[in-house]
Image 1: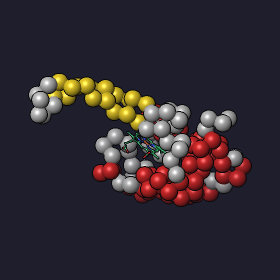
Image 2 (image 1 turned 90 degrees about the vertical axis):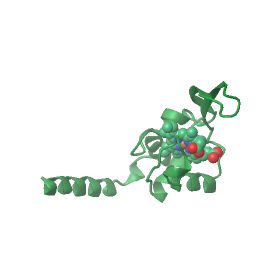
Image 3 (image 1 turned 60 degrees about the horizontal axis):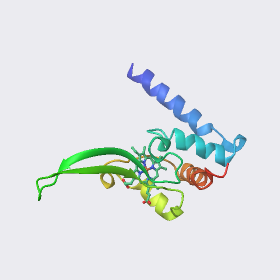
Length: 123
Ligand code: HEC
């Protein structure tokens, strides 16, 4: 069973490696990654990337005043972020953010993803 799983993993890994993305445009490839980046799709939180989005609201007791305060989790717009900042964020580990997941994308994938984010609203 273990071998079978390993085989499956190797086969799917090698076919994934073989995908030559030249038959789809960088924009299409980036879009694919934005929606399905081997993990939770960026689109689920960042929507169209151009505006900050409130994804959750909650109440919390303020430690000092002991009063209930409204809090919210805001996802920032990402279409104006520089490539350097983008890469830094995408390569940061889990402890950086309590909300955004950690992804394991290759440099090529990051390039296409960034390209897509920059052009997402121009289509
Ligand atoms: C579960 C929600 C969630 C998902 C899914 C998510 N993000 Fe985020 N993202 C956030 C939040 C919240 C922040 C801001 C706080 C932080 O850095 O954690 C953020 C910050 C960022 C930043 C930094 C923006 C800045 O100005 O510093 C970038 C770039 C980014 N996300 C890109 C992506 C990409 C690309 C994906 C998909 C591969 C993605 N995010 C998926 C929630 C999410």
